[in-house]
Image 1 (cartoon, rainbow, N blue to C red):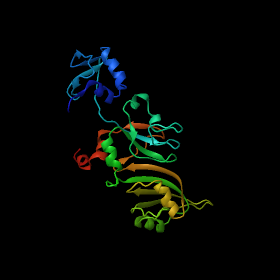
Image 2: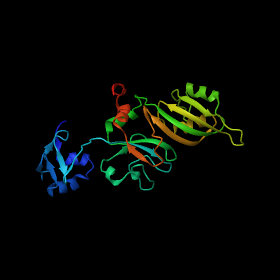
Image 3: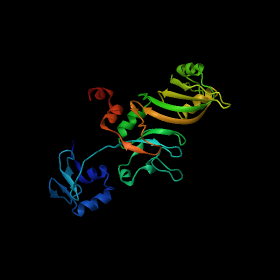
Image 4: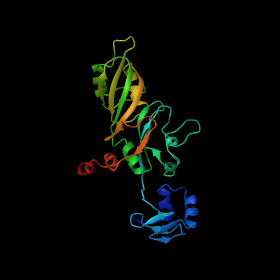
Length: 250
């Protein structure tokens, strides 16, 4: 790895702002390869140098990848003066990494949300040219039929005249015998237009009651995560997002 300034290494590792870190270094709490360092501008190789803070070894990580089961009522943003954000659900320590949501979920939509500080990966996931698949589970007001399945396969014309890319609609439960018909479905999209799932069902005369994203590309939502809970991705899960060929070799 290319050498980096010591204060940047510590900042990337979540030890605070650059100003806070400079104070820590000047206090003599940081050592590099066994020698106390007070110069924040010292260039080090975080992969080779033994860096300690108050005697505790530093395990350098440039990027973080967090899987969150976003609850309803929380917006996919880093900050907001009125609404609670996904980043607000994280402990203070994680906030030092300047994490942001890679993609968006509507405020009333639950499910898989990736938080990271890896801008290049986020760009790859969100690029329209990549067509990263996204799978949703939804509860629909109305009877979803095979005709709807065919319509979604051919592409649906939305309220603004846009015709969606073909998508895969799977009927799990086709309504009920009760007075209020509700269907359970899973839907795979290859694009990400504004409120797309809701607008697609509105185009065929039905309404989404509940929506949850359960997969992005090869990454599936951990079913053990309750709404509002999160965990870091495993190295294998990161590869699912980065390079499918690498995954096959692991």
